[in-house]
Image (cartoon, rainbow, N blue to C red; front, side, top):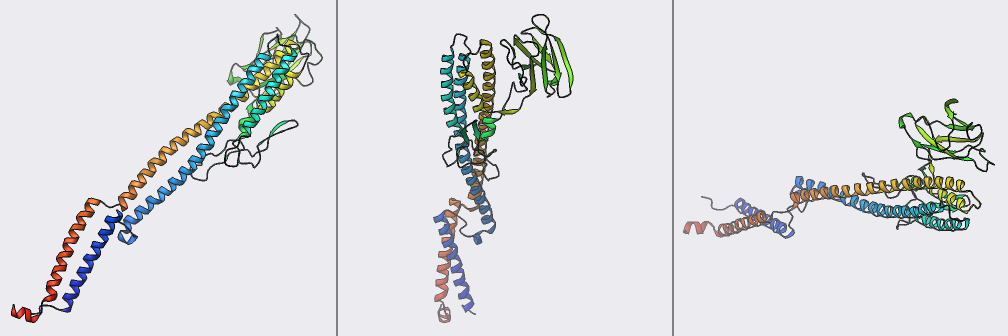
Length: 404
């Protein structure tokens, strides 16, 4: 009978080494808390953990971009809020300037006040974003985007916005040209005005108000002229002509202060128009600039020796334009607010994705400590048993077997 051979000894040693390696691996897992230290430990689990880590890194990058966008949008929203507060002060000054008891000197004082508010507004329009750029520079500018020069303030930035390079494209700037220079002219649908080179030299001429829309479905977007003919008070008439089509729209006797309606529009000619006075109606455009409105208001208030009718007409037009630019800035502020809401929603979504990815990573590579300790104890018992068995087998030889 063969008691021991080299093969048996080799098998015992190999078994010991295998059990010792398993014990060391389990000890390392218990120490690190990870059941995967290298890809060969569990290729499938390692790939799963790697995908989770890539997702977490992507979320971290998106969160950094989101915070940069949030900082920019918060500063922009604050700047737009400050702008509307200043324009409200300008509007209050214009309303006060319409007071019939005010003198030219008092109106000039209000003009000085508005000029100072204009300068404050220009500072806000050129407010930096804290990172070397400007909030309203659009797609970027190394210099302040609004330049005050002869002829007024002009936008020197690049229209548009800067966005982050990630998939969600978070905004990093506001389109300054759109916010500050693209308000709707007139009442938002059409613009009324004196006809060019008309109504001059009349000491008590008439004027047209801003008008209103009575039926949006009837608006044509055409150009019109309103002609006053005849002498006051009973022989005057009006005619409304569509200059785009070259046709007459409506005509009738003119009554001061009574609205004239045509193609879904209604406007009123007041004062004392004379034979030949004419007015125009043109489609509204998005070309009204904040600083142009303020400059015209200052110039009007500094003009002396105007009659009350002229003052009322001028103030009415300036207040109408102020309301339009304030509404446009408020719309820009609303858009920024929507962006901030979207950022909040994106942040919640990114947090949920990151939590899920971390859970996936943990499930793939983290060790169940209870299971790990149990495995370690079982492996330790097995190793001790194998070690004792090997020691007993190693001491046996033929003579021991015979004598035994």
